Every structure is written in C-alpha cells, then in structure tokens.
Amino acid sequence: SKVDYVINNGLGGIMFWELAGDFDYDSAKGEYFMGSTLTSLAYDKFNQSGVAYDVHGGNPNFTVPAEAVDITFEAKDFPVGDD
Image (cartoon, rainbow, N blue to C red):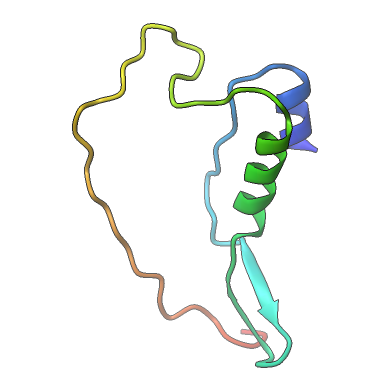
C-alpha cells in the first residue's frame, strides 16, 4: 500500500529504516532466514509502474559521484526455527 501511494502521488521513492524483519521461512528446514520480501516487492512495483525512477531523484542538478565506496557485510547468527 505504501509503495502504491508513492507511485500514485508521484513521490520520489521510499526508504527502509530497518530490514531485520524482512525474513522468509524455509518449510523444508523448518527455519526462518534473511529474505528479500520487502525489497523485492518494492522493486517489482516501481519497475512495473511505468515511471522512470533513477538515481537523480527529484533534483535535476544532481550529479552521480565519480567514485563509490565498496561496502560489503555478512549477516550471520540469524535466529533459526521459532527463535
């Protein structure tokens, strides 16, 4: 509903405060794991909206930096089962 609201009102996009609640359940293993339900849903809705979302956002004077910071992380010790 929130992504639909953003698209329908021509807003610039969304942000996630925390993705710790974005999990999925593997019934074969009987445990939860880090998922991408929220991010996949948002991506799919924006992608199918027909609106051209890009890195420039709402500022026409924005320029993409020439350099980027390479950041990686490892999610571990994620609760299993019903923990």
